[in-house]
Image (cartoon, rainbow, N blue to C red):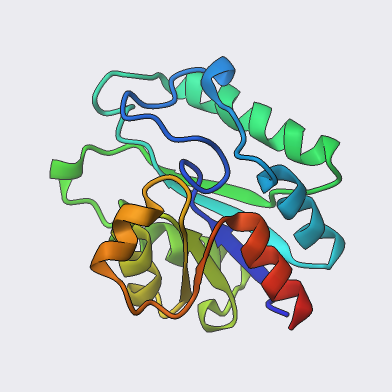
Length: 177
């Protein structure tokens, strides 16, 4: 089993919204996602999150609101017996040309440097082409889940080998290896 898994947030752990998740009350976990993170933790796998949050640059949510959303997510995962070791987010606008916004690999590289991870040994689970491209750019194994934007993304990557219905199915597969 991989020593770590990096997860995209919106569309993988929680329901996504075209209007952004702007408050802790809007953060709604997808069925089975919190329990899947807990199962990874119980199996000795470190779990991280890397998430684009352009809503900050667009004035849709504040840093305080983002912190409250992440605290709710961390608490729900902890209540299920899981642990999110670290969360990286990109607050920049897509036009900013930063190195952290997926599809750039910056957030994954930061997690690797901060936690001494060999990205070739872990997985990055996402629901978008940007997630798969960031994983490839960081030499990490990209996993596509069909929640969130995953079904639409699959049309662009119909032959992607590591494709699962949702996070829980991926975790089932990973823990059986």
